[in-house]
Image (cartoon, rainbow, N blue to C red; front, side, top):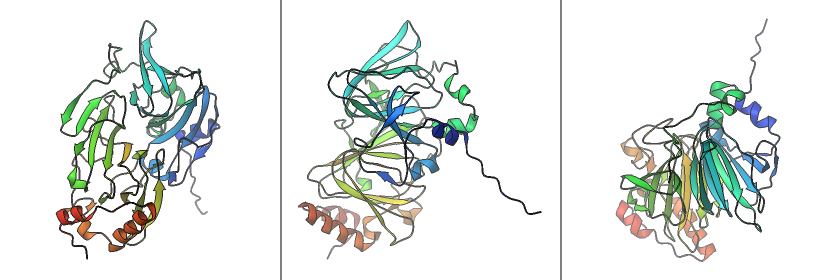
Amino acid sequence: MAMVETRYKGAYQHWIEEQGLPILGGFHVGNLNTVPLAPWERLGGNATFVRLAGAEEGNTDGYVAEIPPGGKLKPQRHLYEEVVYVLSGRGVTTVWYDDDRKQTFEWHERSLFAVPPNAWYQHFNASGDEPARYYAVTDAPLVLDLFHNADFVFNNDFRFSDRFAADDGHFNGAGQFISENHWETNFVADMGAFELADNSRRGGGATMCFEVGDGTLCAHISDFPVGTYKKAHRHGAGANVIIISGTGYSLYWRKPGEFERVDWQSGSTFVPEDMMFHQHFNVGADRARYLAIRWGSKKHNLFRPTENRQSVDVNEGGDQIEYRDEDPKIYQWYLEACAKHGVTPDMERLFKRDGRLVA
């Protein structure tokens, strides 16, 4: 008798389908600010899941939610980690384990914060005229598939007192440097204005990494000047990239010469697939800045090697392609894109630093 393979859905897939929401898949979302939403009973507001290919590989997910003017969402708690980036609007969030020890903090467009695992929390819209919209990245796929018991994940009384003790100032934005370009905090008021450190190894521009909420999920922001693009690199799956500002595009490929292109603007998101080369290009009139919520915490490393090879030449065993070794078509395409947008390219100084000659 021939054996027929039985394929099972994981607990997370069952749960996400039971929620009755739209699920956005594929490679990218053009603008999180405009995607259509549907009522989510559990949340008490409108939402949609964002389940892109690279996130599915990497045990992360995302969802967009909106709070109506003057409205609020339901209180909720869950064992999995959740990092929230505010797309638009302003509001407040209250977090607690005990009713008499609640912490409330304000947020607005471009704020970032981590929800303490298994603490109760509730979001409120502080505007009576405009909705507030946010994008949350979680490790729910990992946690739900690991325990395959939704009641355990959503109705557990355990308190992570080491992660949230309801101390005054927990969400006041205070933090500390772990290294020159590594900041530890629970809340960032404005990811668009946070001062970055130079990162010439990746080409031009600057970056800052964030340990957020003492979690395994972390984040980084990177920006790069007008007329420039970053060096190509690759890494593990699960990094949710959100464009904070700017106009540009990214190239993706696994095999040399087989490029795919994604155009982006403020509010776009994409998740590079596992060890797929990708490269980001600024064709706008201003500096471009993006946020990546991902695995790779230095304190609680999971799914990423402790040694960072993303800025090491592939010829030396790393995961970065230097300008001098990239496909010549990439620069020609960039020149054409800059001309189309009326931008003056400024790559030759970076090429010179990298030992690349341009005819």
